[in-house]
Amino acid sequence: MHFITGGAFNGKRSWVSKNYGVKIEGQWLSAYNGIRFPVNLSDVNHDVIVLEGIELWVKELTKQYDSGRCREIWNRYLADWLSWEQEKAERKVIVIGTDITKGIVPMEEENRVWRDVTGWAYQDLAAISAKVDVIWYGLNQTIK
Image 1 (cartoon, rainbow, N blue to C red):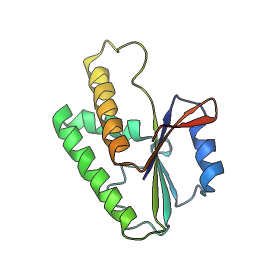
Image 2: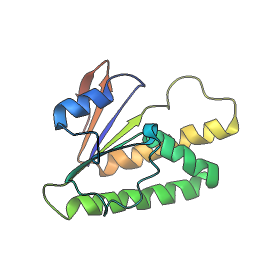
Image 3: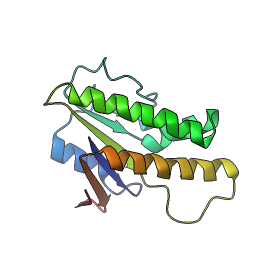
Image 4: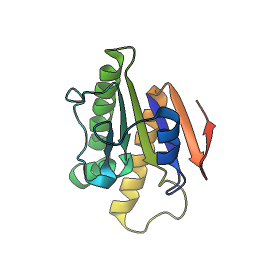
């Protein structure tokens, strides 16, 4: 698994496209395009898949569950994605999430919970990922 994060509009999508040559259709599941949380990857007919907009999928979880339950659900999804990836040597799951954890802490409780759960989700994702890159201004920095 490869986790890519960085600020909004900092070139994460372009960097992934350039470095992995992933085509948008079928391989690229984006919350920004209205794709629902990809719980099960067994229907995917490609060996490389990009999951983009993790922070939006986490936000949907926080609307339904408390933060502890969100993290349990998130970690179950991560385990499933990792299992799918490990079924074949050529498989790769690339996860893109915008960093929303910096800056001013939101005043609204629901936005604070979203920010906190997203931070924990990214920590969990980074822990199980084989590689982690931060993209700023189109440039990557490999941190794992």
